[in-house]
Length: 156
Image (cartoon, rainbow, N blue to C red; front, side, top):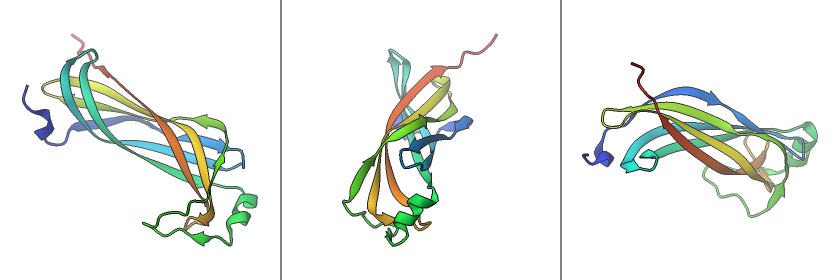
């Protein structure tokens, strides 16, 4: 098998993309997304058939109730590229749904696979000293990534 790291970008097709969410104990809602950017087959002959390196990114958007926004109205805006101050407070998750993306990956050497990336929110912190440009609190989410794949068998 030739060196798979030197290949051109993979051919992937999005099959399913589902947002997730976290409802927080302060009644805020965080909308969560994951997106698969690239897939590379890195090894064949593994216990799972093929090993993959999967590049993905995530995003969070917050929706806070008026009483939470009121607490942050006089906080300064965190500017793009600026490091937030170290004023963090953990905030409990009261309900959650993971975000999921499934893609079909096709490679002439290894065949077709369905690759699934699921991000489950595990912890959330809120910065008590800054807000976003939209006036929302600045949240950070800790994820548990769950990555799996299965070979697509050709039907005869």
